[in-house]
Image (cartoon, rainbow, N blue to C red; front, side, top):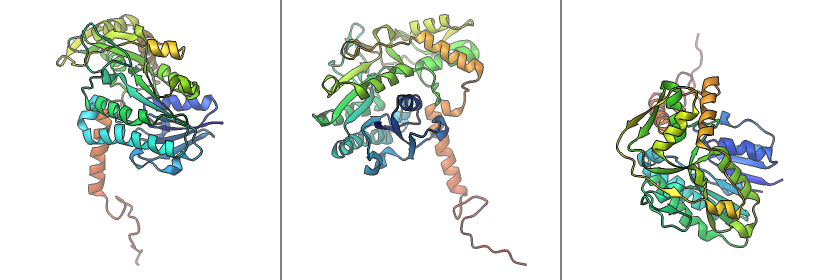
Length: 350
């Protein structure tokens, strides 16, 4: 039975990936700060939770580990711009350190889930592939690119390294996020009959369902060394390249209620169309999900109460909430407690 260390295991993708790995017979070490709660991963005899910051990775966590899927990241552009230094520390430096430590300790395989956001902005007639020049705009994208550049050179005959450049992810997860394009559009349609779209709708963006991208992670754990070592794979599908305006129209048509589009903000400067031929040809893999099917999935989950809207489902809002409460608790705490004090030395007197 192989053991996989998954960092960021309690996050949006990790909470879908970990049960899938367990179902496939892997042992899993799930490392996370668990900002969004440990309840996103159900107990399992082959699951070990490690509450730790990836910036404090220890060699002992890699004992008897065969492969690492390094999902950890401060995720999305607003969080990256708000916490720039932490984004570089976590998304870049900690992942390079983890990969370097893994190689030193004899871990056989390392998978880096990166992002198609590295392509940033491309001309209207350009469709990028894995060999195209990158053009990262956001801190999140820049940190991912730096991680790629620091980790890929570690690949050798004994240490398999592969990079996944994921399209924008969507779909249901136990750690639900509504700050992702399709998920947010579907929430708006369900809640108020309005899909919010950033102007002007002509920008291109590739999409991939969370079930599809986690399937690829499982596939890469078992793929032949020679096929994937030192390689970058765009993860998504050509059919799921969308101009955001047309994506909004497709989602509106898929849902069982009347929906309209509402434009907001300044035009989004990110726009990139991505070619996904390589992963289909080399790994014989194809995406199963479409945007319409994913929107229906989320809509139905909202209707049935399987998921609900809360502060935790908007990543940056939850980070800010945690920081606020951390400050308030520190101000109120004394002698290791609030009302009940630790080691107060107070004895009852009569």
